[in-house]
Image 1 (cartoon, one colour):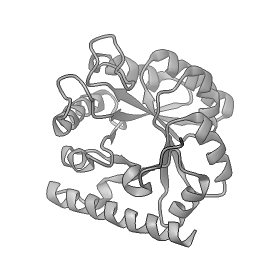
Image 2 (image 1 turned 120 degrees about the vertical axis):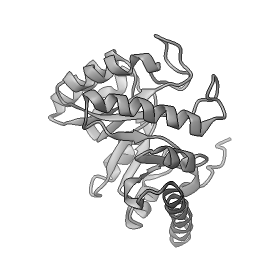
Image 3 (image 1 turned 90 degrees about the vertical axis):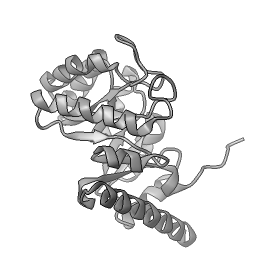
Image 4 (image 1 turned 30 degrees about the vertical axis):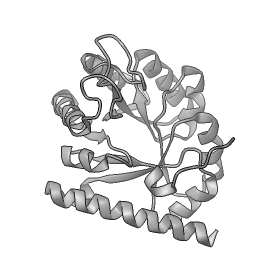
Length: 239
């Protein structure tokens, strides 16, 4: 465990240096960017080590992994983010531990999340996931609503009991006009965020950027970056 702690501490320090450098290059203060460590596929023991190293925001993308991990870490002061594509049959479970759902991309999901939050007496933060590779009326290959659906979905979240509209999220697309153009993709997301804040001033969270492209996201103005591999390492195959 000591060896693992040293490894995670070294990785965190490297990521922290990258964030500091990216903020400096963009003329931003370091405290304008929040690091969310994506702990998917890694055990609760790693979450505990990360907490001991100062991490307070963690993310998961599969409820079957996240639910038992969150339950094992209830004694820790952590904010849990759900970042994966979410099926409505998993909503009740996710709403029991997640503080923020970053992958809201359809009204059916808004309705289910609202009902679950109300039932559990909780308030859930929600980000609209924007798919920059999706045509009007479609969902993206990795989830997300097409850009022209942002406003309607945001209004639905804002009006739903138990939900709080926090902002926008995207994953750099692998296809379409923004494929391989992460900075352009994140710049576009910031334009959507600015427009959204016109009607929803408090929805100022912009979650973008991962291990490979966090600098581009910070340069564009992202408030949160989601980093997994650069902190936890590449998980060996299970075969």
